[in-house]
Image 1 (cartoon, helix red, strand yellow):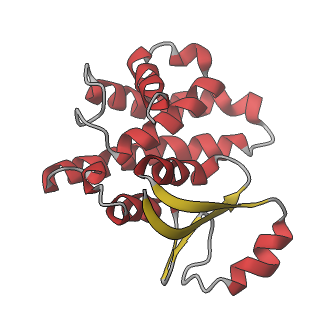
Image 2 (image 1 turned 90 degrees about the horizontal axis):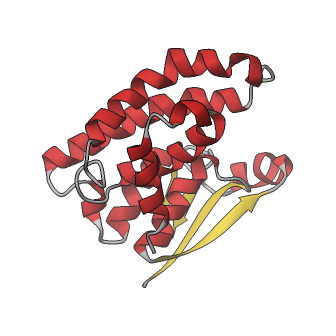
Length: 192
């Protein structure tokens, strides 16, 4: 295990903090989870006082390094742990990983927005058909018969496994069309 003093801050839910948490655990970095349970603790205290250049959640503090935004954390953690292959083994693979992350982002954003919508039940089918299905179809096709999107584990698989958990929970009937994505999530959940 690499000895570090990393703190990851996020609300006491999975949300956008979960993939950085999983990466920290998987890479073996020593870290502390700072789970915010009240708005006051974040907005009135830590947001102004932690010295983050772009105060937002999730954030990561590693000595003098202070980052926010989940995508920045996804790129920092593997490099900090000396596991750059999680970002792609070649420049071409890294470009593909970034492409996949963008597609998954396009799936996650309307999904998370829907979760906070007062008309969740009324609008979830329209959101799925208009904003989710086409992107998930593309991800499914790209995955094909591989265990992982690039044939080896990358941050794209971390993000995909988390997204699949949400998608299966919200649209279980529709998601039966994507057994290989469910299998990816299951394989991911078995990782140490």
